[in-house]
Length: 353
Image 1 (tube, helix red, strand yellow):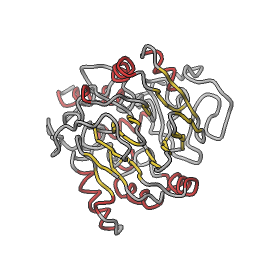
Image 2 (cartoon, helix red, strand yellow):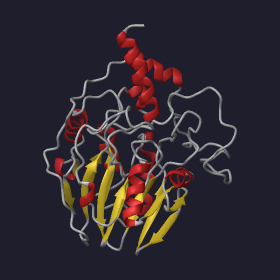
Image 3 (tube, helix red, strand yellow):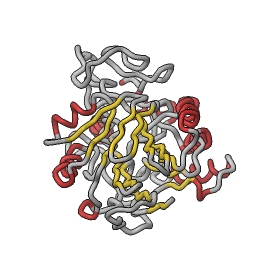
């Protein structure tokens, strides 16, 4: 076995772990360790699923991808053009600051809300291997304002970082809001976590706002035997003056969830949408939309403004580090959307509505 093949196998193992169990064992789990509940249109008693959707790839697909496709070489560092931000402690104005990847600080109605906070240097079950950070965080941890609410969209390692959650719980004791089953994972690793879970369609009212759990087309896993045993979700943050649609990860799924959200909420003031980790399309299309699809989703969900995330920080897939912003620019032109209304957020960048 030559050096290149060895490196591919090592990379396959760490990437598979980081992506949450794509490298799956053949022996299935006999019970769901995270959640027990009634069968529904997206839960069969053991696994969650996307109704009329596309299942995540099989181990044979993963092997085909890693050994037949060519991945772009990312630079060791990809610094943001923006300096690290120092947010105000509180503000009533709608303000969003990019931390990196899917981690954003949303300040609205006097509250501080974090999405999928990850401050670790790698997104992996092991600290010394797996996808590494390619740029500094957009807000230093010590400069974060007091956090009231944390939204965790699903349990993949680039979205659910228990080390970061523990630091935030110790410092601020925020309410953690996450879909069904993820509370078990968090409680096992985070001492004194205050967690509230929800299913698609549920609403949590707290601190004068509403948090809605909405469907998105994705999947979940932390390891080899727990695929789709915890739910994934998008969120709608509804305040007196704003409606914010936040999606951590999603496949486009013919725009079905975008259309449903637009009808249910009569449009949005802001949509925060993923634009990266989408190549090769034959493998990623079902679970990760590309920038062209993100712009289509922007139009379908009837939002005034969109912010793009999930790009340029951790290399999870094959596209070049700057490919998402180039593809987004082309898609905006092709679909007659002005660049100012859909921004690809870089660490430290601040948007105010």
